Length: 246
Ligand code: ADP
Ligand code: MG
Image (cartoon, rainbow, N blue to C red; front, top):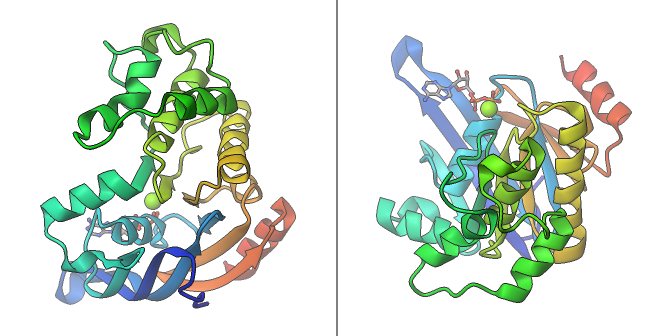
């Protein structure tokens, strides 16, 4: 399952993460080697507790591996200090979680540009902001406060905020986990559009077969191990694979 390193935005090499010690030790990630290619939308699938979030956290440097290496581009994140890591995260990665935490006192536009505004060296690219707003269907909502937006609109603002700094890669952990199926479908369509129209690279952790079916590639995690993968999965492909694995 090792991709060529060419055009690989993020990769894990023999990555292992163990929580606890002795009898209580849990190997959440077990000798995982994988790469994520530029411009690709990848689903990381597996049952609850299989190690999906651990994979994402260790890949992005939000958590540290017990052994092995995690690269963002050419940078081995395990060699960085916490401060260097947060600079790397800010400049190269975007995150989408189940909860979005928009700043209530800032309007949609200000929420979207906040990470760029906080970065002394960066300037807001207004043309890109306009393009993002159109892609996400919030171009008429940029002046509104979060309290004046629907749940789906708030979530699209959070997606725009993750995309605004043009991160090398967006990591999403169960982004549809708390959504009804309509809103979930909309979010997945927007993420798909970001990949197709803007060349965004996305790694999305999910246990939802419908979510995975929007992706170019799906990798399956079981007991911390990468056990299989497929391309252009249908919902039936994913459900079949899950049955086979369980
Ligand atoms: P998933 O995201 O697939 O549900 P996780 O990566 O969250 O799985 O967890 C994988 C395994 O590691 C589980 O057995 C979980 O209980 C354990 N685990 C995760 N985080 C911690 C932690 N901070 N301390 C102890 N065990 C943990
Ligand atoms: Mg998880």
